[in-house]
Image (tube, rainbow, N blue to C red; front, top):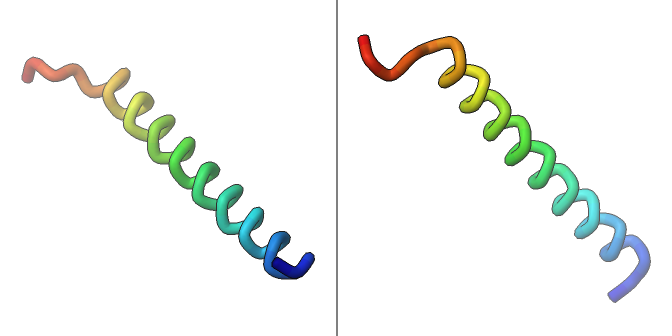
Length: 38
């Protein structure tokens, strides 16, 4: 694997993790201010 491929793969992994964290934080934020029982 070349250096460019390693950097590209690392960037893809980092971006994926960031998006996953944002999704989890959004879900927790929405659940906190929107009770389940309506």
